Length: 94
Image (cartoon, rainbow, N blue to C red; front, side, top):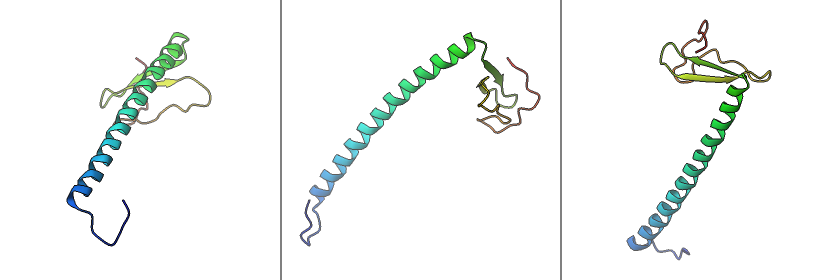
């Protein structure tokens, strides 16, 4: 829409808003699909690590959040719960 010194009409503005809304809805759908695929891949990795004994499973004593940490040398073990920030010192594995 070229600017010719006139303000856009309500109809033109509504058309632009509708187009933006449609674009946002399409992007949200695409993100939902991506997140779903990432969740599936995450489950595969978690199950493979668990099957090979390379997964530390903990439960936060404050909020019961399940924490899975890979037992790999370059990955630090959490000291706080990612959900509630409670201290995990002394928490035993599940």
